[in-house]
Image (tube, rainbow, N blue to C red):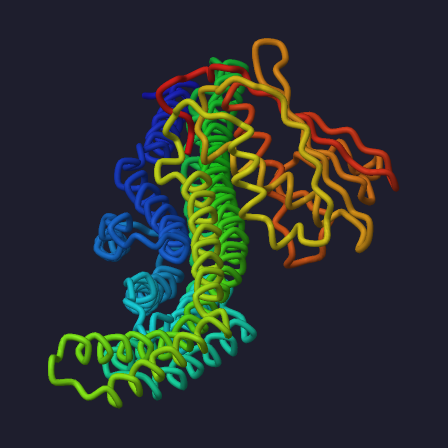
Length: 585
């Protein structure tokens, strides 16, 4: 017979075994591999969402469509959604079941919008590139009596303005640029209507491309706004957090029963181990967050550098536009001079032609043995009268003067073309031997339209040639001279240019008697994007680019200014640049 003590021990043993079995069942391991796969799929969808936004930004910022070759993220997103849908029946996750359908529809809709955005963006790029290509096509000017057709010249200018308006509307996407583009297209069609068929076809092609751009750009902008608003990132992040919380709850329950099971022997050890696990988990989460934030900052830095490069290119194009405007203005005057001289010569040619005809008739009569004396006397009198008229009106003297004037005008055009050739080298980074005095003279010739009412004093010393990239150095000179001219008062403005040899290099000074630079502004003038001009009249990159060019040549540029008295920029460049093969373009 079992004693009550043994019975109690037996009952206690079975109770302990039952509790152990119960605790063991409660601490049965969870299949983490499938749950980790779901977490990985959610992170993949988050990454695809972020990559889509980056792709959209690159699509709108880059003109070269070949650079947009990227993995098919739509297929990857669909595969991830399909895998999650297949995992829902096997995983007891309320948050995943409730949110997966909404997320799937949002991602599918965003994928469709991005495909439409790609098509609209492609149409916009194709139209813009077509317009730029047509505008860059050379157009042979029609000739009438030795003069360039004014209508052809006006049409070419209107074509360039239309291409510029198209570029402005493509990048800025504002109503002002759209109106400018529509007006420019209408102007081109209006000018082409009175010209030949080839010009009319060219204008029609430009107008068709402009209409495509006007039609596709609003669609692209609308789709881009929809894509920006349709983001599943927060919902995916919330789902991932909820899913992790569910997993943590399940693991917590099992961990709690495990703690109960071994609490008899190692309560303190279990507590320490639990805390250690929690710290490791928190550490891993923090590392993931740091990695994500680092990636985001790297992407932002890359986009910032791309934007800065585009603005620098815009500043270079602005300088080129000023130079072309000056060249066109300066060439127009000597061309008109030559045209007027040739017109006057043409007016005097009939007198000389008549005199030559009379002389030929007189010679024919003299060679005729049967000539009548009256005829000979009459022809002789007519020829003498014609020659007297030519001598009296000083036709030959006038023709000599007109020819001399025409030669002078042609020489002026040749001088301007020579200055332009010296200023704009095709290879901006090519290093060669260059005299800075020649560069300053070329720059002054191109900036002559800015300096008409300004006194320019040249104190050029006997300086040696230096090794540099001439086109880049000329750009620095143009920026400094343009800034000096813009800072001068309307009357009594003066710019002084000085060169000298100094410290195994050449020093160039550009001084003016303008308004000067305030002391609080002076330290910032070489900073990128800093400008004191009104909005839309300066990018703040001219002096920054000049500073970088001189720095790349191993030189330095300093500025001294007194408000109300003027400013002086001092540029020193070594005789040999750090690299005698290539400099940054």
